[in-house]
Length: 486
Image 1 (tube, rainbow, N blue to C red):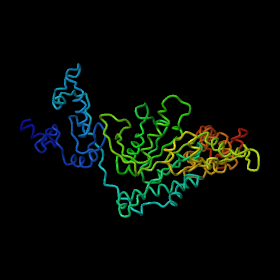
Image 2 (image 1 turned 60 degrees about the horizontal axis):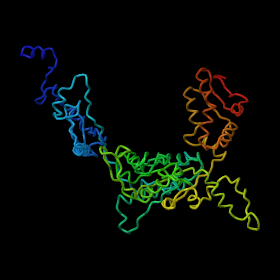
Image 3 (image 1 turned 90 degrees about the vertical axis):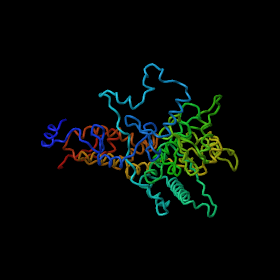
Image 4 (image 1 turned 180 degrees about the horizontal axis):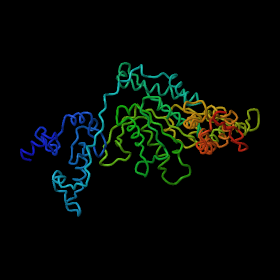
């Protein structure tokens, strides 16, 4: 623009379009002080492995504001150089020999170039763990009592195991084990209990209460290396992801492997047992303690995925399973005595025993299909009792996150009070026992009978309260509905 036009622009109060900032125009991407402050609060993220600059190191900024870490860039160069292919000769890829900066200048306007991949920088390092931060076993159990009804022995064992795990982690940080040369070893746990008795819920509740990385894996998806399915190292990958890819934090975490009974040794099979005994054998190195390489940000290893080295010596493993038909193995062992004479035992003497799991031994588990090397690395065995009618009624109304409290809160949003009679709760518990799925049956029953109530109540704004009675559940009557102002 000439001098006259520039004077008119300044007099009119408008800012020139090509205003120069530090020798550059705004069209050229000049950065003001606000842009610099924004860059200080954010850090770059690798476009391939999604690791931030604080983890992966300095980034290489590509045209189009794409950032790559040095590991991914090196793997890309290695894969291209080893393949021996000339990508410029492939039809449809004429730009491989061009400079990328020259190529980006000819991008059409309708194509959107991605913005810089950045995440917020962490405000500061996590505070170091001290002895004051370690909750005592009775405090951990008291917190579990607020959410889990019954299973006192299981909660006691879990509380002590986690308490000792915290102390082992503290020893690792301060390196105090060299003073008296006493190394505290971990005690992995095997949880046995019928379905719906609270194994998974107990571990999930523990994860919410404690500031320790915890990963929950399913043993049914694990297979031997080289076969379709998840490798054994995938359980460590989940723990690493739960620790925000912090290796040191992950090495002091807890891994819960559910459905462990599904990897029992198959009987009378002529094929390779890739999801049974082979998985048990590969789990031995993790349970005992070893150094494994796991992919970061993915469950599958490939040339473009960065890996991290994790030591499993200080990782606490908890294995849980329902072990169906294990009761028959225990009953057969306990009734092996003669059925005649002074020391005889009746064959049906244990048919009414509600809790046969309390008599379980390693011999019973070996007969079920677990190999002895695997059982030897799980020294602590805790059994969960089947839920009785009284415990099911308490589960309905006592925990902080009780099912009845959830429904009461849902109806309270419609300004309707929900009340359950004690006889109705007893009927729900009796029906849940018949279904033989433990506490999971409670929600299924309530969903069935609350469907009509949740559908009809929003229709009439004059409804003030609803009382669920036993005749309504038995389908011989209806709920007691009280209108407002009555």
